[in-house]
Length: 126
Image 1 (spheres, rainbow, N blue to C red):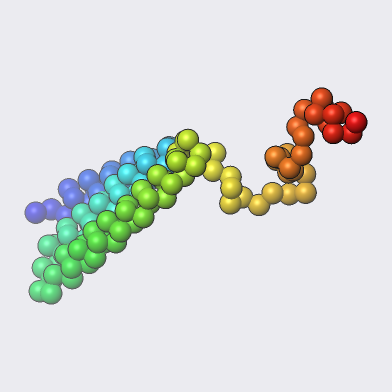
Image 2 (image 1 turned 90 degrees about the vertical axis):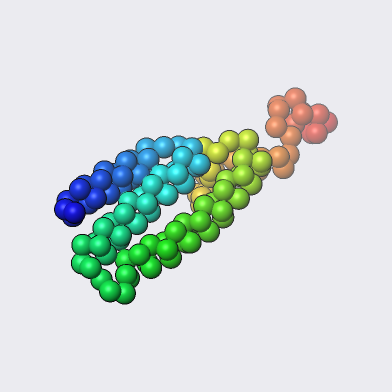
């Protein structure tokens, strides 16, 4: 078996996954793209393990560890995405700004703290 075939396939899979991470806005599609990238790495690990004829099969053992970590990552990631979707109603990655630092001129500062309409401000002053 030539090493070039699985290496090229893994490079293509990794490139598609990288494009998905950088271009997608939906958090679930970003998680799927990360999984695609991890599967490309797994393909490389197994291909090089077979090509090197390792007696310990270290590439295959490392692949099992990557699969376990990917399963844990997808479980925790989906739990976070579901929680965000319940709170926000959207899983758009660009709209997640709760953890962003806000400067002194925050347009959302004081939101909900006082009256928002000018009529309510006038009634509160009277």
